[in-house]
Image (cartoon, rainbow, N blue to C red):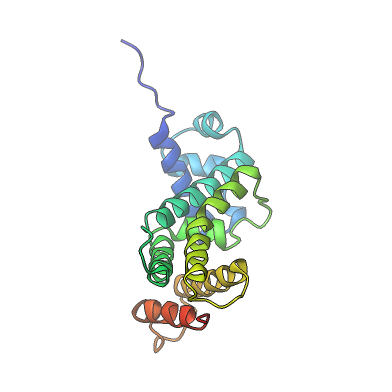
Length: 196
């Protein structure tokens, strides 16, 4: 009987989750492969076998976060009303950030300042933004938005949602401002600001 493979995808996923949590909670200096292996109940050999080293681990973490974000955005089915689609994308953005705060901070929060996204990461980012660009383009084609560049509208809407999610995750707003309760209303108001 062959020996069971211990360096599998489940271990890889566990290592990525723990690495992301460590980065966000303790900072990049706290992420050592030896400590990561200890916290996940494996060996440094397993970490090296799965990733090759710390730079590759960080790259894999970024790619995983970007892929999950792409999946979250792609799950929003485009509707007949592109403004509603944009609003639902804003809600999905928040849901991704709240469900994956460690990955959100790696991809969008600069948790690893020295990490420079490579071609694969940039391609993943392009796939992630595509549903928003498509919805903005559809709104323009229906005459709902003015003659502003599609990219400018998409960036403005994305940055507004990003700001809300970042404020909520960082708990950097007064308790009197309930982001969770007002998220959808704020997103809808931002969309209305671009109407023709």
